[in-house]
Length: 452
Image 1 (cartoon, rainbow, N blue to C red):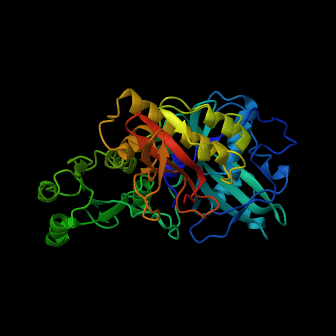
Image 2 (tube, rainbow, N blue to C red):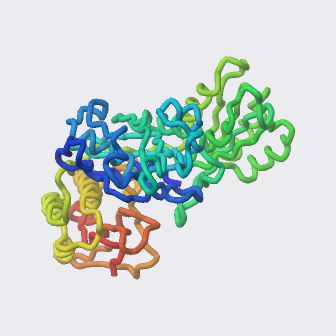
């Protein structure tokens, strides 16, 4: 499934002033779109005419400080172009009644619900939006859907939208795989010893799945072990011989948490190990535990958010992006002749996205120069922690690529992963060299993942 990292890495450029006219399509919304929702479900058929959006086509307040037209555009992206989407259980009959439709009269109507999220760059300010959306396929007429509800929430705070995504996605179908996307690396595992019984009566339906979904948003595999004392020796053996990335022990239900925490800390001293809850049963409700779990997961798997968000508004073509990327050049950031030529008619399909990553790499180059080449650690770690981009220093598919510049030979193996695990026509890369003599980053390839 997609995660918070996908949300941050795929920030969408909000274009200049969207329109407010209810008779025209919002920017980013197009008729007859079928939205892939995953989880083994059929694509969601979105409205093919503007009447299908009329109930939720809101250009008013509530999306940060955006003008009305831009607010309308942002809301349309949540429906038509979400970065994050998971299917939810069918809305209840009572909820459908509250929205003015009578399920008992349905013939071909098919009500569905999804949780979506987007990140939009609005003039250098990133806004995060999350929503639970209810759509009735064949809700206007056969083949024409009706969007009944768009519970959108907008914030500049990533943790706030994370909490909103958890709350809006409480009813997740069992068909949804809480696992990495195909081709991605496995997620680290955190073991949660939650004690009591497997289905305590005071916990809501699907509580374990919601806990695991909350962890998956942070790219963490949450291994829930109910009633650990009933299999103590087996669990202790696992913690000692195959220690996970973290251990959480639910103090409300496990009488002696130190029995598990101490051996784990001895086996893996650098790992995360904490109590979840209190040792006084009944002091915290389920929502309290869920919020605390999020707090611990933020410590286990922190997500770097770029310190500076480059101005991307108005960048709609490679002609625009090429000018902006060339303007990044300075003593710290150099483009080879090959890189300059690649900016014209570049085949990478998202110029504004490539500009965003190039701007962040230029910021890293500036930091590299100002620190006299000492960033306090590996360049790849610094890039992720400070700017939220992934840099790989090696590439097994290449045979030691290099360039000659100003009388020195530079290794151009390092690269920014603009996209990964995508088809060749959508997978972006920026290959560059680290010039330690002149304290600069030299870009030799910018575009698709076809550097040779």
